[in-house]
Amino acid sequence: MENNPKDIVSPLINNYPETPVGLTIDDLNKYLSVVQTHSDILLDQDRMSEGLFNTDCLNGLKRIPDESIDLIITEPPNKKFNIEGKSKSSIIQDYYDWNNNWLFEVKRVLKNTGSIYILTDWKHSSMYHDLLGGFFKVRSRIIWRSKIKTQIITKSWSNSTSDIWFATKTDDYLFRGLDNINELSENNLSGQDISDLWLDIPEKTQDFEKNTQIIYIKILKASSVSLNWVLDPFMSFGDVGVASKSLGRRFIGFEKDKDSLIIAMKRIDEN
Image (cartoon, rainbow, N blue to C red; front, side, top):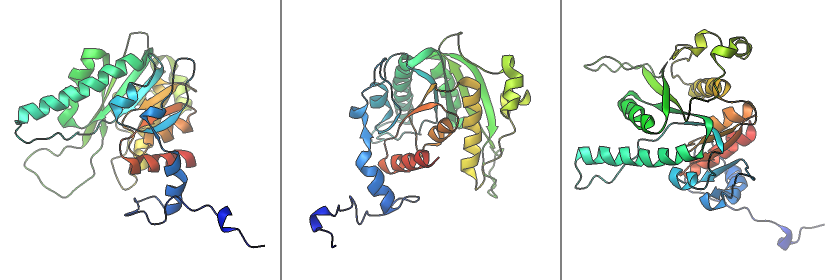
């Protein structure tokens, strides 16, 4: 029996220009039709659901209910501003103000027992320390090895580390560290692992995805429990979401770039 042409469902996309690396046409047909934007974030205190959203950080955060998120893990982008006619100090101020605006919303959505971890390079580290101190109680600056080994020689000391700032909303926060060393050891965390010097994280190599997963899993085990709500407002390819799903946490992610969002949707769906 031949198919009736009316019964054949045409694919959403047949010839997507410059198909993103890591995605196939089948992936695009599967995920593009279900992409959600910030207008689809319909959450309140009595109705929370996981989701990945094609939106910028600030618009997404404004749709999240007050005091509903247990843990935020994120690596903010080095946002570019229009530099025409602006001085360098003005551009830096714009970047500072932009970060200040989304952190203001973070304080609102984070539970009183909640924590935030910000991953940053050394150039912006002091800025995030200052910003976090205006909203939260800064607990630690974690240092980890992050730079890919290179043959390039510069007239300076070679930088091989990045920072992770850990802050909390109040003094009544969840941290499964010193009081739970035995339990942490059973989950591949030990006494050494509660130090703020993370030498157990391999340097960035070709297996960068594995290294970042080690970082996020370590944070998730120390500062959250099963079914906690985890948010990454700058999700990129969904590393925090993948780690959260593997540990039974509930995840919400925002990503402005649609191609990156679809890759994140695929990765989290397949893990």
